Image (cartoon, rainbow, N blue to C red; front, side):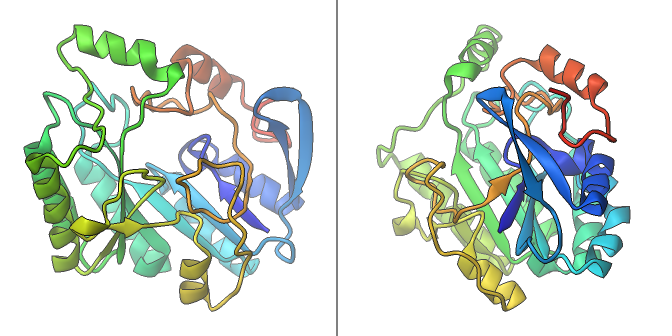
Length: 297
């Protein structure tokens, strides 16, 4: 079994203590995201867990616990989102220099092959146009050379729960532009540039759950929970079954996600995992690290 920790929230940033308590207990309880009264116990015993995949914008709170995970025999890797968006889009995400330091510290501790850089999602707006992303991606890629060997990108997708937030941004003069897949020159040039920058800095570049074919520009479809990558890094075979609960364009193999929606307080305006920022803050305040699930039922 592969544990996803988590697509629904940032467990390393906000719930590292809870996670380690659940590791020591050998299980956690995960409510159904659509019906919190239904919950499932998920084993976190080393013999039951093939790999843990962390998703985070700030793994720093988890770093002191990683030696314990190693001693307990867990395999894991980290999907690390590192962007340089303006605060209008990412108001509470760690700023670039701090994030770069933490990324390099993490990679030095566990090895660059276990830290994947996510420049994801790419948001096009008057403040973050193609030129912005070209400069931002190049700056980060050069800073992370030798600290990671894979970069993941995707284009921002509109979600119903984000519509009001994006409309508010538009009223502030920051209208999010959703790229529909037309082969316009600025987009083609940007994708080719990102692929070249990644290659120049020793990284493979792949896309995440992207319906637009980016292969002509040197960016192949990727998997975030990736059976082939796991075999390459850990020499260990896991399930090859596609996760049917994910979008059609998602290539990830099956996993168990132990997070909950509306528990991340980074406040990213385009985030699909948080429908209400006030609720997320309230949920974090009520979180009890001694409880088997992130939130009490």
